[in-house]
Image (cartoon, rainbow, N blue to C red; front, side, top):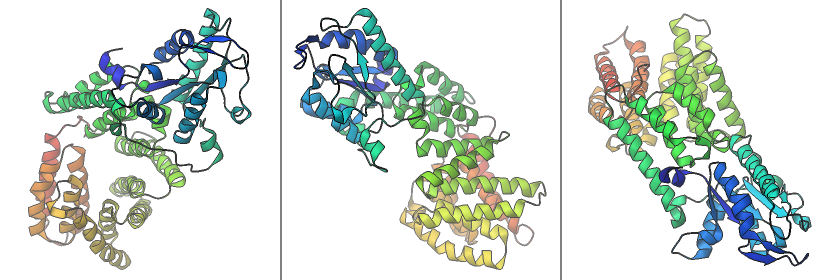
Length: 468
């Protein structure tokens, strides 16, 4: 394991007594250092994780701060409950209150566990004269490896009694950046991000994807790496419009990250863009499951609307009689997304565009109702003065919807400048095409044609795969 990869690896913090301790119940003299060195640490390292024990924490700060940071933020914690050490039990309680899973209790069979811990799936190990035999060390190591592998590959299973007993128990979310004990990880993640940026900015034309895939190969087993590194890699494939690679990477993510709403939303986006047989049905299923589990959000509803919009466009091009139904589904999804989070203009502007496409008097009235609300939402984000691509793209689309071609001409250069990935101006161009197609039989669409052409030219200049 290279030094940089080790810094990016998930951490397993081992919470246990140090040195030799006497068990108060049996009187056995137990060598905890030997248990750690021969039973626990080798198993954790072989699983691809970074193993840290409390007494070996390298920090110049307060030891209790470092210990609590590890308990709260480490992806895995092994807690040795042998001798019923009060400190270990207290720290186990802190961990159970903070994290729903990946806490692995172990204990020597010289004594049982207290009643309150009887529900916990702890790993027992055998001692002879206070030490692990080779066979016992191997058995303990196998059990630890199995528990870690199961957690990495999924499905995720809660092991905290608090999360098991109470629905929607919140736990504790703290950024790694708030504690100095994870500074090495932060630095390693930043270095990896710099390497990704270099691959995108300096690779010869058409070679950025190969460079990024080479970086991924260098990472080895992805399931053991810091989630921030994996998310950045995942989104880099999105920015390259590398939908095959993005879908494949999702399958290699650890189970907990696969279940995160953001990664599932982005998987649905990738499936819709790739559009292989069955992809869009799978994408809809993912988003509908998210809506059931998490409730309505602008992001999930907006992605669902995008799928129905793409299906509508394909059906319309093929003269499929189902096209109007798909248009209605897209409008409903986008409108739901905007109404549940009115500050998020993205689903709102798409709802307006499709309502105009529908063309009925009722649809026109609904578009007129939504337009000032969406305009207000994007204005609060900075409007034409914003530096964000989607803010500026929405200003451009609203100007085109309102036939304010002067404002559109002013916004277009800013939109082109703010784009950082080819799929972004491609998306905006496709939205403007809907407006152009609606008007081209009745009015001059030169301003729309010019904007669409400029957006597509910009998309060709940005990092993307040949498929875009």
